[in-house]
Amino acid sequence: IAIAPSQLQQGQILLTPQQQHYLGQVLRLGDGSRFIAIDGKGKWWLAQLEKSQAQVLEPLEVQTELPASITLILALPKGNGFDEVVRCCTELGVAVIAPVVSGRTLLNPSPQKLERWRRIAQEAAEQSERSIVPTILEPVSFITSLSTVTNQRYICEARGDFPHLLDCLDDKELLTNNTGQITIAIGPEGGWTEKEVECARASGFQPVSLGSRILRAVTAPIVALSIVVAKLES
Ligand code: SAM
Image 1: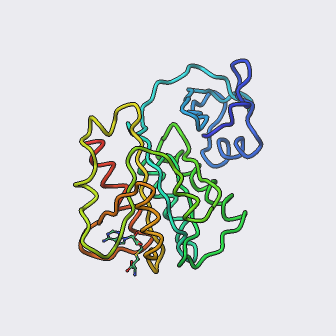
Image 2: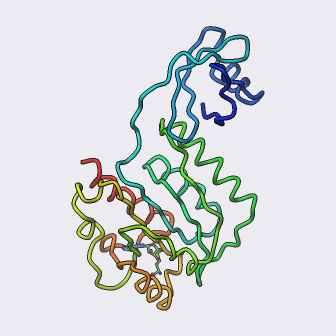
């Protein structure tokens, strides 16, 4: 289960009523059962249930994170499509998701949506046994998001003769050095405007292709991330 760092006190995990319910009623764990607690910031512990609280048995050394940090700048798709994007990209290992409103974005994000996406990221991180929960930033305009400073920046463009993302990524050693940070921007259903691509280029983003077919706005981030993950982990 995911816990807040403040729940860990003197070798005990102070479980919330929701966590007690999840462990006891959903997972049907009883006194003496063991489970793993993660704090969403890279720390894991083996813990044991004891009378609706938990005793920490030992810290665990686990490596489920990618050797480079990936930020996705995603123009919000319409409907609830973003829920699935957050879930899949968390499973794949994204570090930061920056939802943006671009010229052709059809959705107006609400604070409730942001809460929902953060909850989905937490659940997906738990199920994928990740040691961090990805950060979901507050939605901003696409132009504001361009100030992201990472050493490799790409903007996916569905039309035009651009090199494939796979051919543009540095080799694995360079990608995974200490400053290994990659940002990838994906447009909305209607695509980026010309001005947006120009601004991105001026901010150091290289336009790239994800292949010969036009992918939906909810499919493209998953494909882009899979390409980077395959490069990093192969
Ligand atoms: N009608 C739009 C256009 O012509 O640009 C299609 C937009 S597509 C549904 C949504 C976003 O996914 C695009 O803005 C782009 O970022 C990304 N995308 C989809 N297919 C792509 C491809 N084959 N190569 C690169 N990016 C792609």
